[in-house]
Each structure stands twice: as structure tokens, then as C-alpha cells.
Image 1 (cartoon, rainbow, N blue to C red):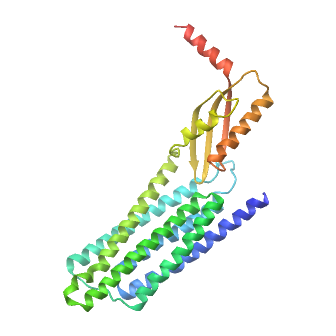
Image 2: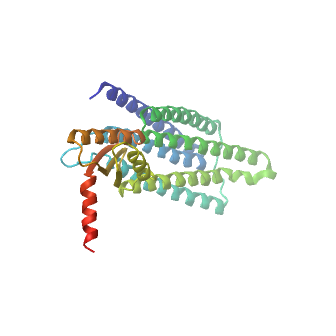
Image 3: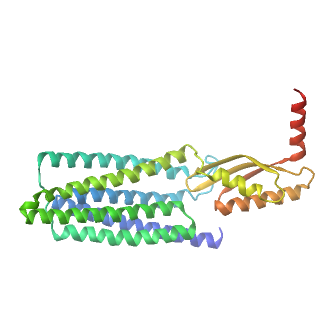
Length: 312
């Protein structure tokens, strides 16, 4: 393996591993404080941090497993493992959100006030904001450096957690105000409403993640990729036409299969050199793509078209 690839792999593993441990710490911290204080908002945030935990674990495993070379049973590699893990993650999180909505509606209808806001409530949420911010920046930096969609998605999870944590902090502040000022007693339910807001955020992120996962499992081509490939290939000298473009993804790996028309009288070495130029051009818009080019002689294609027309 190239030394640059080894260094990049180590960097990606390190940033995902540290993010995984950070997610474990902050999720456990939130669960403990949420149970002690009875704050549904903090428990909802613990569930949201569970999203970061699972996402970090999926990313870590994806980098380890998806990078394995193809074998006799997996000719296109192991990228689909990442899609399957993300689908499981989405279903689990949606079930968690159903519980949050149920518990929140029960508290609102029964007018129960179970929240005990303590200093630990604000400490855990403030700690969450600091940790999530640092991990989001580290993952975003690594994603741009290594052009990794998996790291980019993981950074998005931590970034979303920052905003939901701030929402819960606002809810806890409202609870304190509601208890100190009887005329503002309705603010005592702000924690429950904050939990609902967090659950809505988690549902939104989960649905987006689930749709991307389903598209990956169904081999849906990345939006606009076909047009970009056709345009960049036909702009190369020696290419008469580019057609029958097929694009699919397997985890972070993109597979591109295209047919081109070229001068049928040129030498085989020239045709081969042209296909290498095409591969390099496509990898400029899709780094690391596995590209297969099928050259077709222009003269034969046109003569076949003329013969077929003469039959009518």
C-alpha cells in the first residue's frame, strides 16, 4: 500500500475513534443526569447523542471494512455494509423518537412536573456543546482533506447535536423561571416542549440519512453525475460521443461504466491512452471512482446505423 494511503487511513481511523469515545462519554453523561433530574429534554438529548454514537461507530467500522479489497464473494467490495448499518441506525432512532413523543404527550396531558433542574443539568448540556463543537470541526477538516463522505456525514451529526443541546438549555432555563415566578408557571413545561423539538430534529436527520441509505442500496446514481460525466468526457479530444453512462455507489465507493465512440482507425495503444485520460478526467469530479470505459469504433457504429436504415 502507498505510504500516503497508509497515513491517510491512520488519520481517518484516529479522528473516528476519538469521536466514538467522545460520543460514548457524552451519551452516558446525559443518560445519568437525565435520569437523576427527570428531565425529558436531557433524556431526549441522550437519545440524540446516541445518533452520534451509532454514526461514529458506523463510520469507524465503515472505514475499516469498506476499505477491504474485493474478494471472490464481494466483487464490488464491501461498501454496502455501511449502507446496511446506517439503515439499522435510522430505524432504531425513529423508534426512540416515538417513545419521546409518547412520554412528552403523557406529561402534557397529565400535567406532571417531574423535572428537577440542578447545576448538573446545565453542566452536562454545556459539556455536550463543547465536545460536539470540537468533534464537528475535527471531522469536517478530515472530511475535506481526505474527500470522505462518511466523515462529512459524521460531522453533520455532531453539528446537529450542538443546536439541539442549545434548545434543551433554553428549555431548562424556562423551567427555572417558571418555578420562581408563579405567573409564568406555564414555562415549567418548556423542558417537555424542548424534548419534542429535539425529537423533531432527530426525525429530520434520521429520515434524510434513511433516504440516502435506501438510495445507496437501490444503486441510485448521484444526482447530476451522469450529465457531468458525459459533459467532461465529450470535451476530451478524440471522443466523438459518450453514451450509456451508468453510475452506482457502494458505500463511499463510486462505480462508473461508460461507452464512447472513437476513431476506429487509430492504434490500440492510442485508444488505451484515451481511456486512461477519461478515467483521470472522471476522477477529478469523483475522486477514487472505479471507472470502466468501453470504446467503440465510430466507423463501425455509423456503418451499422446506415445498414439498419437501408432495410426500411
